[in-house]
Length: 161
Image 1 (cartoon, rainbow, N blue to C red):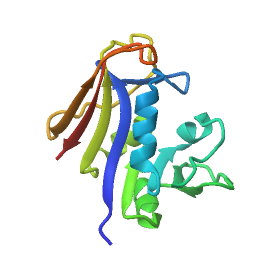
Image 2 (image 1 turned 180 degrees about the vertical axis):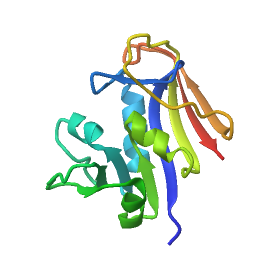
Image 3 (image 1 turned 90 degrees about the vertical axis):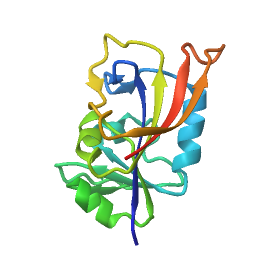
Image 4 (image 1 turned 45 degrees about the vertical axis):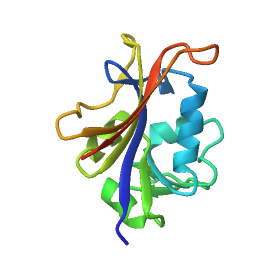
């Protein structure tokens, strides 16, 4: 079975991802899109991302956590490398969901990226998405305006190699 590997993230215009192990932006439409795209598939993440979720593993998805430690997680599979995680995934569609180091390791093996790009510069972020634009081509672009639930304008984008 050929596995489709995608990256999914919400970043600022300066590639900021997060601060203090949390998201920079609360965008309900981005959360909804994330859930729609990843449900029923495999999500791969680092342990900091996993532990940032208030209720543990994401429901209705195979959760795989990359860790150098031997974690005992009741609701997620633990692997020690990206390749081990991909090989052990039971689904054809795999989504890399963070954090920064995991994204960096997966840029070369992913064939699709779903990036929500927020029209903001996050100067105080401590985690950033890696540089990526050279080999990627934007294939979808859906600009969205700020509203009462979304503080900034943002863009749903899809990229292919």
